[in-house]
Length: 242
Image 1 (cartoon, rainbow, N blue to C red):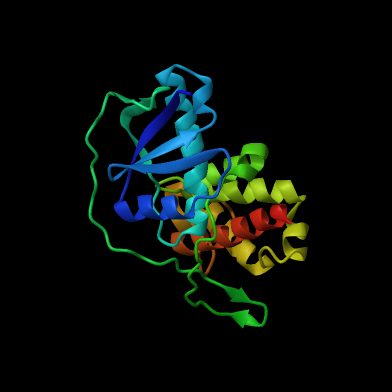
Image 2: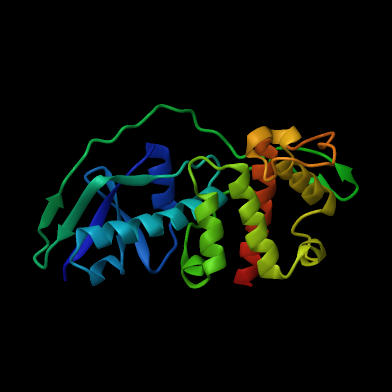
């Protein structure tokens, strides 16, 4: 049976991490001659490289989102140009259009998670260990798919983070449920919203151009906002697996 493979590019650490931690029945990342390729059962349903690329880009957005949630310091991986391989019925590999990868040097980093305890506020370092990168839930739940695509972006904006919050809030039925299920504390959410909405806090990235209310006294940094959305997204997705 013929099958398509799509060549991936990214830092070696990220490619190795996602290769070792993949957990999905519908797609897989395989290693061949020190390169990594994405396979999917959906790729086999077409003979068009254009359709394979479209399917791969859509799937990779969700994979990146899941990986960023599960693997500390993970940076999104990409498709290597328009590079495809097709393995024919006799096991021979046929390549289509290859472009060179551009890889920049970087140091390995750990995830810093900001935590607010009920008895007070405290920030400390927590490293979330990878417990499996998969998209099974996202493939059957449009809300999870949209949230992971936003979270998996290489560069996330305040607007992206706010959209993640809105998706989760609407999915669970409102702020009250978020608080009741201990997904997020009210004070953290108020600070996130106030910061994200006020131009006096984050300038042109704010959701509003003008606000009569004063800007927050202690606005969230982008890193703190990302940590809050990481926690919210992680708890929400885990609850759907129960």
